View 1 (tube, rainbow, N blue to C red):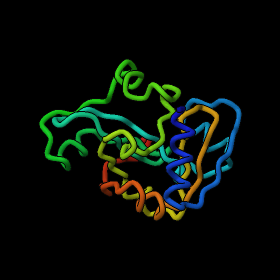
View 2 (view 1 turned 60 degrees about the vertical axis):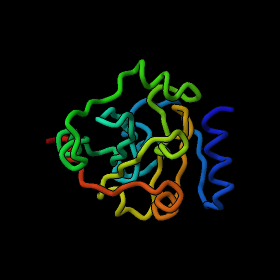
View 3 (view 1 turned 45 degrees about the horizontal axis):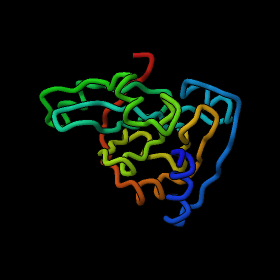
View 4 (view 1 turned 30 degrees about the vertical axis):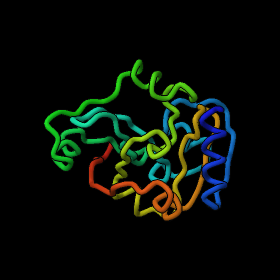
Length: 158
């Protein structure tokens, strides 16, 4: 079963209200936000990293960049790095490379969400393809994923 189907099933089982949109193919979080007519601070980009205890997800607004050193310090890790494309392909074989939804709980990964994104009423994110997007309330996302909320992103211009 494709990750999109698993995600939609999970949302239905969790009794979460959401909308599912399809758009032309887009590869960056900012492009998707623009196609969906959303401000980039409401679009969540999912970043997979590898630290001392394995893989985990960091979720930040599309208009921000992850500060890996800040995240490493917050989590008390000795080492942290972004997952490689090869690693992502192995971890998420049911979805398009780079279109992972921020649901690490579906694959045994811890999830860390930037505090700025957690302050939004709604969030949108890739749903396993470069064409599918889910929009839902952040509080519902928080309830069914159980992420840790941390300050780990900085302005993309910085």
